[in-house]
Image (cartoon, rainbow, N blue to C red; front, side, top):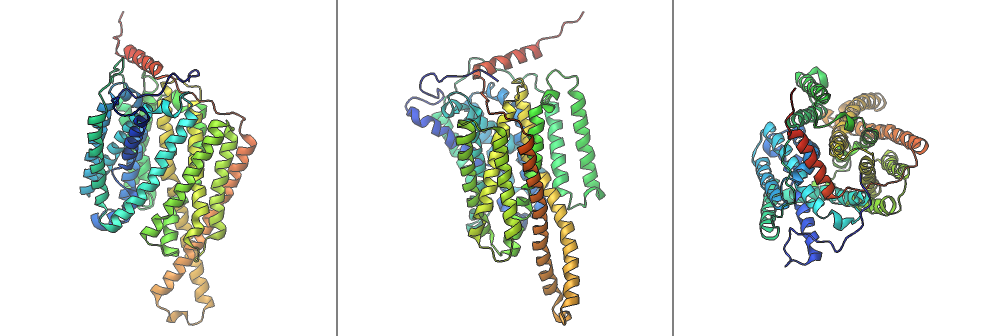
Length: 536
């Protein structure tokens, strides 16, 4: 990806005036990126409040949340083009304006298509603004452009904000209304725009690269494919999968978009996602690891809320307090990865094995300890292990993609694939599979316990049916969870064994090219695209 880059002089940001101390300039952009990361358009932690006040279903809100992830993922392929087309000042102002509109729409609408579109656009502009901020301070974080160090910072910020955002959202809804989170973020985004206008100068690079040669049609088709995939995963159980016309239609539309994109990639000079990115060994391996790993952790979205609410009797504030445990795990995981993987160059095999071991620890704790009398503090170990495992795997395999030896033009496309498989498919496919498995286990165990109680307990007919059914259903839920945790634990241990036996001894060595090198490559690409073809 590039040669070694030695630090040259003290770090400075020319976009920020000199009356601000040089040491404070990077922290200004960290403040910007924190505000941007908190502004998600829709906040899944407030889903129960939204269901009660808007008439939306849980699935509708999940679909909107995943649409934001799709928007973020699809932006990766053009994010460097945006960076070299607009100055930091213009880019941040555009993104803040778009996010203000998206937050406003999400606060006032009860239309599912409008909500999904607003969240998709919020994710797209959120990713653009994040790149503007992070690329500006990249050399401050790692003067040698070591991406294993940089990605530790990225996931520390992104995953930590996800947990903190959920905490702030629930407490905002608890003390007022869920819409107030949107109004707070609109105010913070407006404040950020004032700071940008006052403290960020319109500094342009030496070459302004136009947005030519971008396959916008391919971008739209890939977006539709990802949204259709997400729709099937989110609404599949609700519509009884392919028995419903909605699921069949989404499947056909998604497959058609995928087929057209693959066909167009055979002859387009610059497809939105090329076969080089799709068939890269490191990309394929990372995608496979993501699917397996995040499917194992899919119980986070299916079980934890149900277990805490139905079995342990936690209210919303007690449940969201569990995010603090996950946050501790995220911080510990990023720090551990920084010290071992980024600085000491531990092998990919070692780090991957540690990530899967922590996932197995998380599953084993719930398999052996799940019960009615678990105290909230006892959940610290599994939730912290889950948070640490997630960031370790994400940092390690995002670094491996950069180290895959592909041309830099292909790297942003690989990031789009990585974002889709890691964030979208990881968040939607695993819970869909586990949720379907839970339905079958729950029905089986409910019938079994109902029969056992009826045959073994004299006088059971005198117990009210609702009370009896509730007790049976609750017992069946706990047993079904334990059963699924057991199967997932076996899968995690098998995966861990495969990683220990079959993974290579490669160490991280991912260095980012210089920005002027990237600018020259992009300019040369745009020149070859816009040059008229000669005819004979």
